[in-house]
Amino acid sequence: MWRKCLERLNWCWRVVMTGGLFVLFGAGGLALSLLWFNLLLLAVPDKNKRRNIARRSIAASFRLFLRIGRFLGVFDYQFSGAENLRSDKGCLVVANHPTLLDYVFIASQTPEIGCLVKASLVNNPCFKGVIRAADYLINSQGETLLPESQRRLSVGETILIFPEGTRTRPGEPLAIQRGAAQIAVRSGCPLRLVHIYCDRRYLDKQSRWYQVPARKPMITVSVQQRIESLDFMTAQDEAPTLAARRLSHYLRQELVPDPR
Image (cartoon, rainbow, N blue to C red; front, side, top):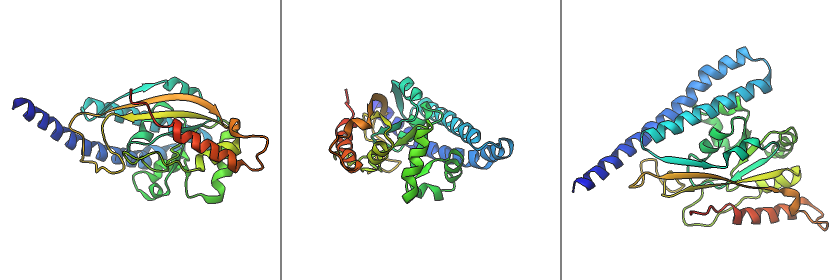
């Protein structure tokens, strides 16, 4: 009986602290936007230098956020091979997307990584300043998205994309969109695969923030192999579309994490 009471109290604690973390995350984004990034705008005239400082600041704030979440007992996490991710240049990082925190985990380990974000976040008052300061790509940029991605990759920037376009639906196969493969093939850049595995359903596509599991979840971020997009081209291809289709099929299979 006492054990069940303690488990219930622990669950209630994690529900309350999960809500607190959401408030902290939004407040942190707003504070960075209103204070730090505006200060950078005045103090650092060089746009690229200012962007890099902003991205390193975001990574540092994410590391602090994750440590607070671990300290409060809301979740636990571990990284494998993150040093490989930090050494990649001019690379497209592609990952599966089981939880709402996946970008936070990856960006916390890669201080200067770029990202392709959903257009809906641009209108969020807590995040629009972060997106602008970090100079992230927006998925609604239409005809300019591909050439801008190519330009950034060609000068050595690393860009994170979740090829599913949204969080994975539990129990369903990965639904890979072809945008990431198109960018990779047309840019001729390498790809770095990342597996994210959560041992319990937590902040997934079909869960509300307060629907926390009975026990603390463990999120594992494992950096996998680096592949060459040009390996999916053949001499018979008249257009990159076929190569992008092959690459998308490959990602659909290879981005499924091994739970062991």
